[in-house]
Image (cartoon, rainbow, N blue to C red; front, top):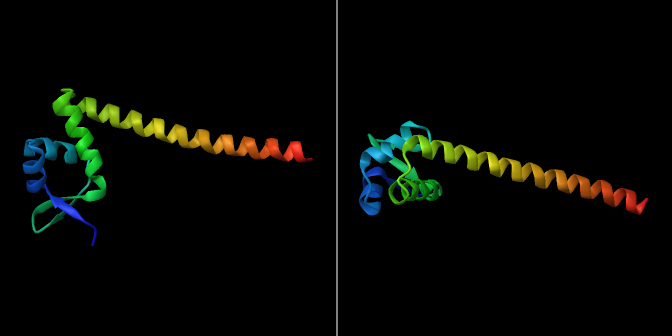
Amino acid sequence: MSERISREELVKIYKVEITFFDELVNSGLLNVQTENETRYLMYEDLPYFERFANWHYDLEINLPGLEVIHEMLKKMNDLRQKNRELMNKLSAINDKYEDG
């Protein structure tokens, strides 16, 4: 089983409101596992939680703002990946014509 942390432990360690955690889950920004009525965040998703908590508490960004920023960053990463793929294809085509 993967490593995880309970919602209660998480809000205690990071000193955030439990409602903030629940809002992230309800908005789809965090995925949790529920077992015996306890919600758990997987350790692999912890960086997302930390980022959202920093943006919210340090920069005072509200939940809709977090959602917009998260979607924009996802789209930027997708575009970066597509750009890399296109550059690799272009490089392969260029190499083919230089060799031929």
